[in-house]
Length: 396
Image 1: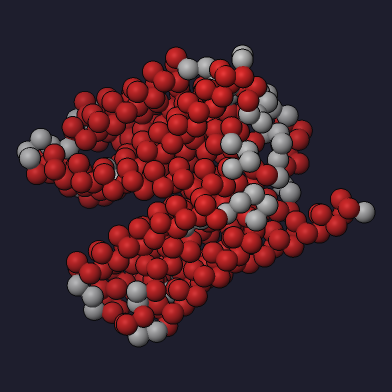
Image 2: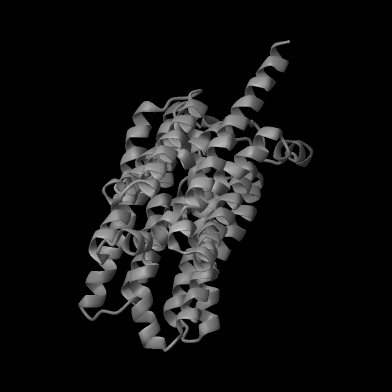
């Protein structure tokens, strides 16, 4: 492979990583707007609808466990091919099947594809952009936010125009086919990146139990639990505790995700290699300050709650970048395991908050975001401590 061919491959697969995140954002935010129309057509109950959605998250979780190993053994291109195939088959089944089990299984297969794209896209950036991976990991998250805004608007337009919920998923099928063609026809620039095919199981066992990794698992789980809890319960909290209208409380969640997207865009320019822990410390302290002011203060300070998104925005991508800096081997498997803990946080975080709201009321229940953030801060501090201790040992 010549230098020009290698550089071209790096550009193409970097663009492919961005496209992965665009597809994920599109799929994830198509579910909510289309679900009422789907339930009305199929006469499924709300619990059945919830189970269909749960199947997608289960598929995502399984994919993060399996595709990391697949990436290390067979390569990133194979992950893209498998993920695009999963989404294509899942969408075909979802728009074709009429039964609850058939549709739930199809959503599980779609979840496998989105989980594979998440790991594949991030690991491609880590491999092909090692010197600027913090910047690029933030930027691909920005594109995820762009598609997350486009998808609901398109779904609403199609449903309002009496086209139904299926055309939105046919757009997803078209996007997956484009990725399938791209990955099928484009050679991965192996010599240009840091990735070496193969897996060292003996090394992997040591990697996953490193003291820093244990705290990074907790950090990622607490952060995604916090983000999903904010997305699930912030509007209800503002309505019930602060008396905001439905429109105003809905706008607050848009501001929160707008802050996430803006922060990731800004973070792509100001966060550089070897400053990751400093950035995470700043993000966790800033986010904790915003949440504390928003919860403990009067209604006039409630705007600090969505503002926290601006600080938390870089946490996921920078944690990923820092984790991959620690490892030279089995990087795909390490990212997969890290993302699996993220998936657990996303499932447990809002659920636990809902239980506490039922038991102790909305005000106390929503305040669980404070312990989540404190756990993030403690994790960052412990990783800093472990990293400094390791640096001292290596220097001796």
